[in-house]
Image (tube, rainbow, N blue to C red; front, side):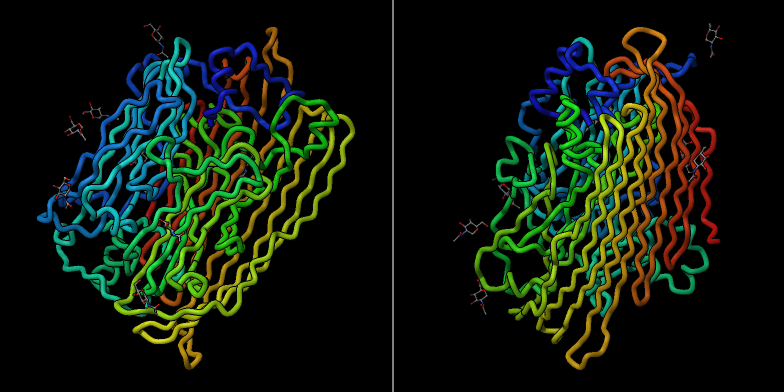
Length: 608
Ligand SMILES: *[C@@H]1O[C@H](CO)[C@@H](O)[C@H](O)[C@H]1NC(C)=O
Ligand SMILES: *[C@@H]1O[C@H](CO)[C@@H](O)[C@H](O)[C@H]1NC(C)=O
Ligand SMILES: *[C@@H]1O[C@H](CO)[C@@H](O)[C@H](O)[C@H]1NC(C)=O
Ligand SMILES: *[C@@H]1O[C@H](CO)[C@@H](O)[C@H](O)[C@H]1NC(C)=O
Ligand SMILES: *[C@@H]1O[C@H](CO)[C@@H](O)[C@H](O)[C@H]1NC(C)=O
Ligand SMILES: *[C@@H]1O[C@H](CO)[C@@H](O)[C@H](O)[C@H]1NC(C)=O
Ligand SMILES: *[C@@H]1O[C@H](CO)[C@@H](O)[C@H](O)[C@H]1NC(C)=O
Ligand SMILES: *[C@@H]1O[C@H](CO)[C@@H](O)[C@H](O)[C@H]1NC(C)=O
């Protein structure tokens, strides 16, 4: 991700000062794809895409749609984000599923950029841009934003979009963005669908991926169509009554994300929540940039200092987003390694982008067992920090709250969320060596809530394992990374008689392997880089009645000739396997891209 700092201004304006050699850059630098699209005579703009599941509403005509913003992000660096008045469609438009559509187009040469969309400081979408070509590119992101209904249905709010871009003689790409909201009603699908509160409304992690098109659920529709559709079209059995932004107060001038510069940079927001709250989920939005864009490949500070490297990319390769309530650690997340379209080898991401690049994942932390700390009609400080972080991270959060009709009592009985226990090994001679980091955490949290539905105790246990192994060989010109991250969360909700009301298990794995090798090129100042990336996003959710399994794998190999931060030529292939299933169906997609051409794009809804 092209960063937004003074030093970047220098990189862009004075590219000569930015020379990359294997020696000065221990972790992979950020590139711009300076080549014309592979030798075809087709000059029509090309569509870029992220491999994902279609939304179940994709085939339905929206009951109404609202155009929220048409804007061209030219030389926006240093300017406030774009803010416009937000008012939902008139009351005559009855809707129950909301989808945000973000369309963009760009032509010329440009770095990839990070962008965010907020309504009154509540983040709805974190996205990044693809790098354009001379002939132009365009893409579309659709995201189900129904979980933000309490915000979307309010009037007289402010929609804010931040996309910092730099345009000059060399980097000419202007990002044209259109954002709209598509609202779907139950009438459109022909069934009366009401969201009835029931046992399952107490889903502690209030998120479930959905993927199957209406027609693909076929027989199941007849058998159990109401339940199936309800669950498919609206993954949240009961929506939050309020979403409170935990974001920067100067959002209208600098964007609502907190810009976190180092590990001591604790960003906080004071909030007071209603004593009617019986359930709370904190949703984190995270992206990493600058010296931490490839944090998972950063060697130790000692390596950087001993070898007198000028890079800022150090501080080891462990990072975690830490969340605190009044200074006490309540949750932590190792973010999924989203690779932006200038990352590792920009030829990989043409026209298919890396997992999550157009729709960055957000991370839910169950706050329900901590309600005992919050329900006292007093202000509390919610804090966000990056363990071992260096400059810079863009982070904010939304606190989703559910209200009872009368006061709720709550107590936090146990809250053991320790810091990650970390072991580090580092061995190097000059530029070659090995760095190993292993971390583990076991958390146990218990809290009860007494509301109009009675006494409910939530017990949460979580195990996290993190391992990062980085090897530098051949005078630092060969780099190999193997990273593993596993998280297993179990949530058990019981009533006053100790009977199980609901249980949920979430298993997450984000394995990542990267290798790069740099050799001198045939022309002066050029080098040839061989690059490989293997990455998976694996998320499994098992509830009492529902289950969801997602595995999205990507495997890329390529070669490129680079000069400075520009890619002059090369070849690359990208293979992606997307497999999703839940109680209602399956969806899988296989995409193979070779040198920018989609040679395979198979989808199937057959469950194996
Ligand atoms: C592009 O057009 C030129 C001139 O018409 C032709 O010679 C060439 O074969 C074309 N290239 C491709 C890849 O179609
Ligand atoms: C965006 O452009 C379309 C097409 O011209 C127009 O219908 C729509 O009202 C515009 N939206 C905004 C928010 O100006
Ligand atoms: C945005 O809307 C305008 C019409 O207002 C249209 O010309 C343009 O192509 C749209 N851009 C994208 C990226 O959809
Ligand atoms: C929105 O603001 C306008 C102007 O301040 C006001 O006239 C209108 O009543 C407000 N609408 C709502 C629903 O609050
Ligand atoms: C409590 O927090 C709110 C913001 O949510 C702030 O306006 C108010 O001044 C705070 N009160 C105290 C006593 O700190
Ligand atoms: C709950 O909040 C309301 C409004 O702030 C307050 O009047 C009431 O006393 C509170 N109840 C308890 C039990 O603290
Ligand atoms: C990735 O692709 C390479 C070459 O296409 C292949 O050799 C390797 O086995 C693949 N790895 C995985 C995990 O699919
Ligand atoms: C790939 O297949 C999907 C589903 O059939 C289709 O919507 C999409 O347009 C195709 N994409 C490309 C690049 O061919």
